[in-house]
Length: 340
Image 1 (cartoon, rainbow, N blue to C red):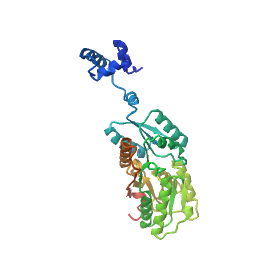
Image 2 (tube, rainbow, N blue to C red):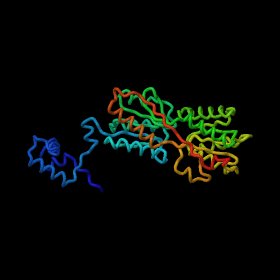
Image 3 (spheres, helix red, strand yellow):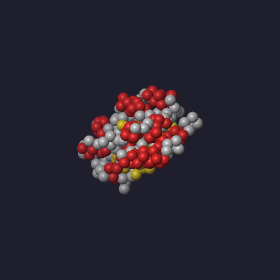
C-alpha cells in the first residue's frame, strides 16, 4: 500500500508548531528565525514533502487546472487533440483533467459538474453526439468560467470555438468523386442536430451542384457515429435499386464500416463503389484498400483551443468571442482512386 503524502499539518505536528509557521518557513519568511526555517526545511526534505498544487490553488482560488471533455478517449482523433491542448497549457503552468462523455448527454452533464467541483479554471469541450440541448453550459456562462468548444460546437455567439472548414472539405470530397468518374455519390451523415453534420451536408450539396449532379434525397443517409450504425446505413444504400458508386462517410469509423459492408456484398472498392472518410485516423492507411480521407488538423485544433482558453483565463472580462476555422487536406488513397 502506498504511503499517504506528507502534508504541512504532518510537519507542523512533528515539530509542535503551527501550520502557518511551517508554510512561512518553507518560503524563508523573515518572521521565522533562520534556525527554525532550517529545521523545518530539513524535515520537509527528509519526509519528501512536496506542495499540493490543487490545495494551494484552492487557497488562492486558483487551481491552475483546466478540464477537457471529449466523446471518447480511445480514438487517435481525440488523443491527438488532447496532446495539442496539454502542449500549450503546460507551458502556462496548468494541469489538465481529462473526462469522457462516452457520447452521452447525461454523462456530459456529469462531467461538467465534476469538473466544477474540482474548481477548474476553464473547460474545453467537444459535444457528445446526443447533445441537442445546451442549458447545462449556463452555469459556466453565468459564472464567467471560460469555455471553449472544438469540432462539435454550439452557442458560438457566447463561447469561442475551433472547427475545421467542414463545408469546403465536403465540397472537395464530392468533387473528387466526380473527377474520378462517380455519378451517384452518397453521403452517410451524422446525427442531424450536430454542426459537423449540417456543414458537411451543405458542402456535399454544393459539390453536387458544381458538378452538375442533382441532389437525390435517398443518397443522403443519417447515422450515429459508431461502426454498427455505419453498417446499417451502408446496408440501406446497398438495398437501393440503383446503388451508389461512391460513399462519403461523415467520419473514418463510418467509412470503415461502409468498406466492410460493401466488400461483404461482393462489390469491389473502388471499381464498383469508391469510399472516402473524414479525420484520417492512423489505421486509414492500413486497411485494404487504403482509405482516402480528409486530414483533420487535430494537433492544431488542440493548440488553438488551449490558446483561446489561456487568453480567456487572463482576460475574462474583455476577451472577445472568437471562432477559429482551420483548413483541411484530402489525402487520396486507393479506396477512391478509380482512374489512377
